[in-house]
Image 1 (cartoon, one colour):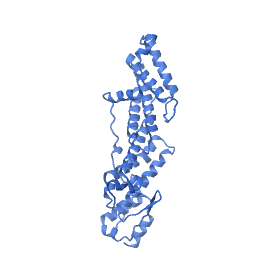
Image 2: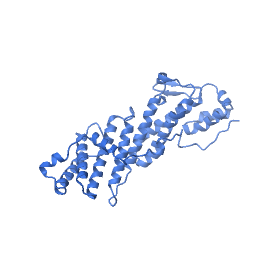
Image 3: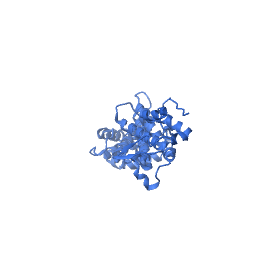
Image 4: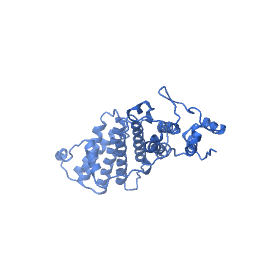
Length: 309
């Protein structure tokens, strides 16, 4: 390999810088064969890794980028910016590795032996990271839903609730990156959104079943919150209890349910049961957003092109 090519390797500090070099080496494999030794050394949990396979180095640069995106999710940012800058690239990179990237590494061990690899190079952990990214993405989209005072609110609350349910669903398969507390928080928030939805529908079109449904959700959410431990749901027990009281008042004053019959009218159900019913209602499905299934080694390309003579 020419000195200028070796110098280019020494200058690489990111996946964006490595990808053009990888493409050039892939185009002319003879140059890759002339590289002396292994140009990169990697450390993970005090274990050193190196390989003569360029695909291995590319994949290591990618999982480093994935980790950086994941660690950046706690930074202050708008929900849409967080998705664009970190969640979308993370998920696309995970998809790239899972779909083709991992298999292009000819030195990769198979089966149970992949446990010797760094954590994110193991297919099960990479799949969990992808699911975690999707879960956070749905949560961010739900939080970005704007519900104005002068518009029909019920459909907006419905969409928000569905997005939060999708977030919880993805998070159930995202261990160890997201725990059960994340799932519980999103389910509580989804229950709160559906409670608001049914309450708005009962005000727009006064019907006993709408008020009962809203009351059931409010009560179930309050019960699920309990003392507020083991989750960080952005929905308060006070709001849930207040909503249940309003719905109970509507049932008595508007729908002529006798006070003594109220307990029989509003049969209590668990939040999981109510959310299950909501999932089964027709016309409530959400389509996956395109980036959740798309693959890309990096969303932020280095515009430079390398030609190896």
